[in-house]
Image (cartoon, rainbow, N blue to C red; front, side):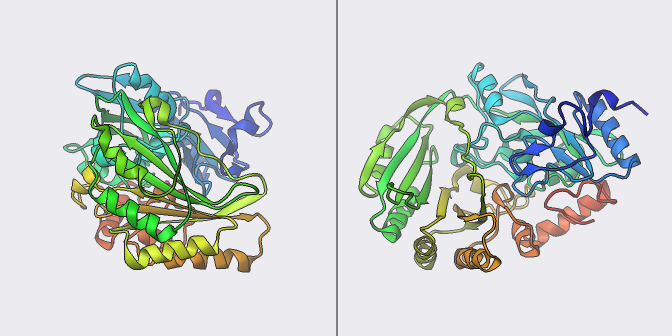
Length: 430
């Protein structure tokens, strides 16, 4: 067996504290393994299985549920496998341990971009296997819609390539099925010739929440696919009044399409300007110390009527600490057949994410009330998106995949990971 000592970090080692820390907090893994190539990944997996340790696989470490860490188990940390290689005809190969900020900067040098997430430090591996929603989702689809092939280490330690013709069942499953089927070590992706886009925020006074939501939905229904927006309803803090922030991303040429957005309400500020795509990726703010949010998300086929009233009511009842974030979808994302990838909610037009910020020691009944507020919105949805799911109840997991999709995923799981080695995730049981 190949030795793994040179890639292992254990309790007491100088780098252990950093290696056991992610945005979700710290854990006490027995070992963190940082391979540099696919052979070392295979060796690391062999070691973990022989030691009968629970396995967590880490790309960027952004799992809010701590799936990229393990108390008493092993972490295979892919952060050293972060290469970005431009091939031919706009195709690129990216290591699963890369993060989107550096990856976008590397591609920008070649006049290319990939429709990806919004946050610089999010890992390529985790986001892509969830689906990948970003600022070009309406023009170029989800990140998985541009994936041409993956390199993957299976539960048995075998290194395989999966694409539309080779292991097509596995290729289908990893595009939306999370890390259930193996350790993806690299992606081949079709990049787009995008260098700049118009990006920024428009801030509005929050005078009439239902009317703002109706106007935004109507405007985006007729907007070109080059335009993507996200609307955030934010509570007041201290001397700062409650307000609405609209993020705008436009990868087209006719700037007149932005004018209807400026008429959505009482415009307070407008920062939209031309920027490099790599520069629009930012760091998402993290909750202050001592705060643990209750987060939920749902996908809507349409934002209208009762759903708008439910969102407005939930926001109003939670203005002391509730943020509601809505991202418009559709376009290229919706033209992919629901059964083409494991992400099947292709009819979704809007993603709604709601977060109620509460003290870590908030009483159980307060957290239950926050979840109850969220349920008034969730019941209007058709499912959830794994990239923003911060709980893993049976109801949450059922919302990720329609029954036919889940049944197919179970078949693939049984074929490729019958022992459920890869279970620190939104787990699909074989």
